[in-house]
Length: 199
Image 1 (cartoon, rainbow, N blue to C red):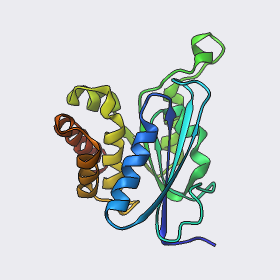
Image 2 (image 1 turned 120 degrees about the horizontal axis):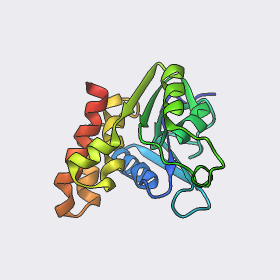
Image 3 (image 1 turned 180 degrees about the horizontal axis):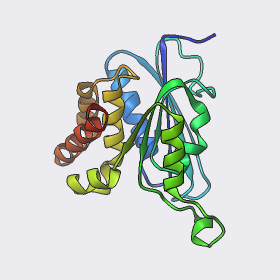
Image 4 (image 1 turned 90 degrees about the vertical axis):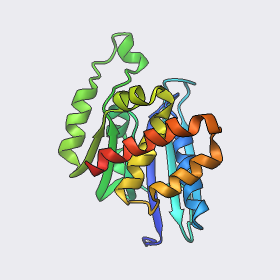
């Protein structure tokens, strides 16, 4: 039985992209407005470069932090291949946000894989009606740091209206979690991420 009071977001990427931190920002924003939130992560063996998947569920009466396949309201892919690998979690009619830059796995670097992120992007855009492709490199360049990627995807999530979290909710969460010197840069990333959905 589906609990209509629970909203689910699956975030997937590779180590070092900030996937886990993004999930915690989403959870903090939800809790700050009085919702319950549960998170869980599965992290690949490689400290950097291994697959990372974060589950975030918000709402009321959340039975488990793990999202069943086919039940995610929104899937956020920090990397095209990782998004394609986890597409089975997205519900029919759900929203997909995917960063366009590929990160080649170790096997590809060793010549053992013909991985091409563009093929994954093509597959995703053809498979999901509500698919938004984010030029993460451009956003990070404009904001002056590659570390704002996780905040940019949170901005896109807010603009999608899938989780009931507004940009203001995310701004409040950031103000509680970040040093004052980092606030301006991250707020810029948040709003640039939201513009991917709003354009």
